[in-house]
Every structure is written in structure tokens, then in C-alpha cells.
Length: 250
Image (cartoon, rainbow, N blue to C red):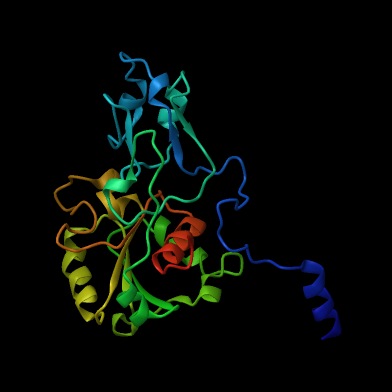
């Protein structure tokens, strides 16, 4: 036992700190894209044609993070510096429109209304629904529970039953075979409830968009409270969005 305790002290703290604006991540981390439209020539379409999901448009230059795969093709194609990428993990938003970057400051996720937060309290129980995903987003959400990110220290947990949940986290493009299962799961969650769309597929369908058996992400008639972009989203991005939703971060 003494040697085990000594080993614990030698290893030190393993958990990442509370997400902040200055959270230190490696320089190679693919975070929020940075757009400088004034550097983009009018006749240049290199970034537009390089994007596999049509996430980029011109006149004016815009990038839809809800479609972005973070494949880096557009940044490599851009020779003027109009498109670059930062290591800022803060990407989650409260509305679909806020995922569209145009060179101005991005609006981050805002807190739920006071009554909903009063009912939910400071803890959050979530049922994850894999609606036809490739398991990339699901794997990252599982990583958010490990000793490094440890979202349980903030009172956020995944639960097995929607009847024990405060909301659902949807991953995947929502295949035709999973649409009814998703609706049934949401109906089983008591009100007030929240819906989180995690990953590009859950937001827009990703690479599966517009296929006959794909619903292009969470259906329009289901209100989404938090959009977490990424392919897949980083655990810190997911955690940052949830804490902002709960009003525990400015």
C-alpha cells in the first residue's frame, strides 16, 4: 500500500484543468478556423473546390463548421492566408447559424433559461444515441469520461436509460433505420430535456449528407440546444459546450 501511495504522488494530477480560454493544447490541435476574407482574391476558388462537404462558400468567404470535417484540405489549398486554423477548442454554439464563420467573432454557446437550469440543477445526466455513426464521435465522448477529461467531476454523466436522463446526445447522420429509435428515446426523457448534436454528421449529415437513407443529422422538428462541431469533436470542446449550457462558464 505504501508503494502504491508513493506511485500516486509521483504521477501527480492526471486530470486536465477546468476548460478556459487559455487551455493549453498542442499547436497541431485543429481547433477553430480563422477567416480573413480581405486576403482572399475574388477569382480564387481553391478552398471551395477542395472541400468534400461544400462547407466553404465565396462572396463573401464563409465556412460552415457544421459541415466541416477538419480534413485540412482547404487550409492547404489556400495560398494567401485567408484560411488558417487555430488551436482554440471553443467551438460549441447554441444555434445552427452561429456555426457559420465569416471572419467576425464567433458567438459561443449560451446558458439555458433560468427555469430549466433550476430544474436540472448543477448536474446533468445524458443518454447517448448513436444514430448510424462511424463510432468516431462515440469514442471521443467515451474519452470525455476518462481520468484526463473526467467530466463526472462537473456532475455530468452518461446513463443507460433515457428515463433517468436530462437529455440526449446524438451522434451520427441519423440513418433511416435509427430515426424512429431516436424519436422514441427522446420521448422517454422527462421534460425539461435538452438535445445535443455532437459531431458534423449529427449536425448536417457530414459525408453522408443527402444519401437516400440519411436524414442529414438531427431532424428539423427536434429542437437542438447545443451544437458541438468536429469530426469527431474533441472531449474538451464537448465539455466546454456543456458547461456553458449549464451557465457554469462565462
